[in-house]
Length: 422
Image 1 (cartoon, rainbow, N blue to C red):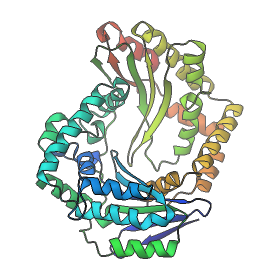
Image 2 (image 1 turned 45 degrees about the vertical axis):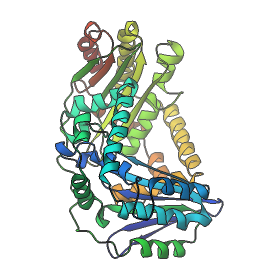
Image 3 (image 1 turned 45 degrees about the horizontal axis):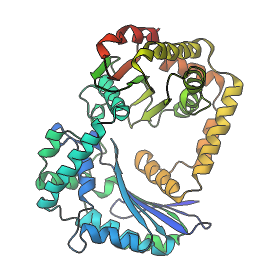
Image 4 (image 1 turned 30 degrees about the vertical axis):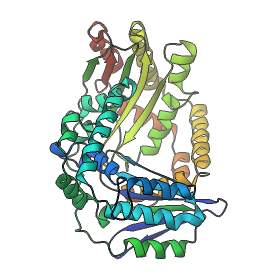
């Protein structure tokens, strides 16, 4: 059972005691992601995440790492388009150490100019590494295809030009605007004493101030069904084909989870069985849904040799047509409900997963959505719900496509996309 507490300054705490483990996981979640960045600040959420590991007045970067590793713990962070998370996992007896270090990083990072210059080189190498991974770039390319210059259509990393222009003043300004109590959730899961943890976190965070701001996500992106391709000298063509999805709090979000799982959510899915197992056209093929606060996209990904692109897209088109015409069977629905139930419950065996579920849920929804609630809502989904969502998501003329690979101009992607659009 979880416990929720709000500090007087607006910071929210969500905690869960898990008596059967030795460990504890703590995460600081901040509503600061790439969609909150102006054009000149593109990539600053991710860059600031890097900089908070570079040192405080009492700990340099090496000491931050050594103190956690000295007690067998680990420390990391990640940035998404709508939030950033700093987290640590330790033995429960060393949770205070993790909390102290995370708090010091969070509030006291010096943002030294020499460190900023060095970290620019690191992030630029990260961007180059990313650009050498077309199977990753194609997803950002798809977001750009459907959302154009909207912040959700841009990459999280930024560009060489934008990162190169970052200054200490820009980092401080962004920190002061976004890293405020109203935007902050602290999640802890593990073999903890909840009362003691609340006391500790109140001591560390309770007197932190920050101007309250409206939880404004900016303008909702406008979806446009389009084709965007990039010529690249690779062995395969990487493809994303997709439609508008659903925002995080949509009533049909669980219907979509189940539909996605049937179509391309695992190795028993229709796409995997048809394209990989039956035809051998791709090593990796799957579908996925990405939900944001006000929008979403549903995508199908696959990578294949240039000579197989037309056949691959035709098979995807046939699977979409089959869904439009026939829907799914009751057997498939029940099987995927059981599969997702297993995935959810097995995930609860990790304190890191428990912490992540609580932190993300509280930050995005303003409350913790329990596994029991998720299972109940999935169990309520009917074949009629699935059919209704298929007709909405897979309607003709709203599919978009992104592609990266060699000889793009010769692949007749426009004609292939027309087949998908029915």
